[in-house]
Amino acid sequence: MNFSDFNLKKELLHRLSEIGFEKPSPIQEKAIPLILEGKDIVAQAQTGTGKTAAFGLPILNMLKKGEKALIVTPTRELAIQVSEEIFRYGRDLGIHTASVYGGSSYNRQISQIKTSQVIVATPGRLIDLLNSGRIDIAPKFVVLDEADEMLDMGFLDDIKEIFKFVPNDAQKLLFSATMPKEILNLAKTFLKEPEFVKITTQNLINENIKEYCYVIDEHERKDALIRLIDYKAPSKAIVFCRTKRDVDDVAEYLKGIGLNASGLHGDMEQRKRETIIRNFKTNKLDILVATDVAARGLDVNDVSHVFNYHLPLDPESYVHRIGRTGRAGKEGMAISLVTPYEFKALSKIEKISKITLKEIPTLEDVKNTEIKKIIEKINNIDASPKSIEIIEELQNEFDLFTIATKFAAMLFEKEAKGKERIGKSLKEAKRLIEREKFNSSNSNSGRRNYKNRNQRGNRYNRGRRR
Image 1 (cartoon, rainbow, N blue to C red):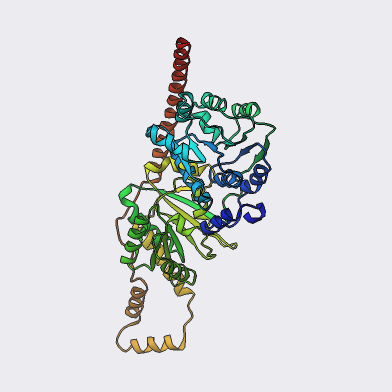
Image 2: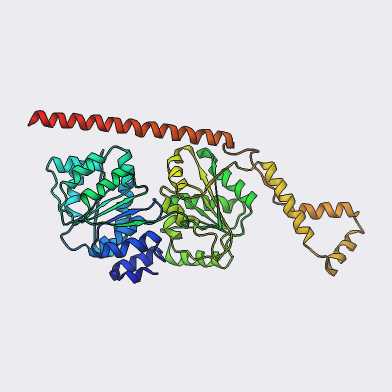
């Protein structure tokens, strides 16, 4: 199935082609037709399955001039991300988006809401604006994104309050990774005869891809990348970085140590980008260092390894990144470098992947691997008349042992260098991750308790004002 099968507007199809979206994901395939039919839906799908496009594309396709869509998300980070993604899809339609969350200027956000058709908001700030009468919206479409996470964060009462401001005839879409009874009750109360869609993550990531992550400190990124390249010896690899500046920095570093690498990002001239991609496809380039946007739609079947120099901020980007390897029935490997600051992003990725925690090989491990490869290479080479002639000539000056050691030195001329150990040991990495999970669990519990106390206080104060 292709996106064109949904009969979307030509502007949307053009943008999807530019972005590099090839085929709809399972959640998009099931949800988009139902939403286009005007039905309310309850969709169970993990982050990383392409759900933003699943609700964003049909809404953009149906949104008329003067109408608004409201998307409610649990966190500021997700609100910004969803807003940017929706804007990217709807750019050719001239549709603007507003991000609404706490800690930012009320006046600026109110101004954006007035001039935007798609409003992406966190519950707390949205309730403040609605209850105070600072904004008055009657959205045609309402989306609850990651509803179970909003439940965990104590936003259930806020969501119910928000629905009081939503017109009865608005089309309502609820997306959640899990379906606790509170979410189902919410759907029964506020949605009209919803269709239920469930997507399992079993086949989200290609089974031919082996996934590993290594815990490091921030200053070890380059050393860790080189060590893993030396150890894994990729035939063709993509290194993903978060920013264009990182792409330039890493690409120059790899070239500086003699690797056949080049960077790729959106600031490059089109002709240069096309040349780099062509060189990568035709094996004139071994390592491509790229941003997510630059690598969207990159169709190369023989990428042996994908390296996440930085862990992506959301699982959806992770799925797209590692999907560059393990194609056409071949095996692939995805390797992620993770600092303790990225553990939250890692925990989300772990929900949809089979990522294995590993320890970065030591310098001795790399050297032993290189020796094994050289021995294997020698075992697979048959003597030729020319090679016999060279040995006979050399025997006039050296004994056979000296000749052999000199040839071995030639094969071993690019010896691995660096510190003996890089990154955290497996034991320490596991301890740090468990500690982060414990702290996160306590933080969410505290946030729920605070939220409940705050809501009780607000209800008491409202009662007194009456």
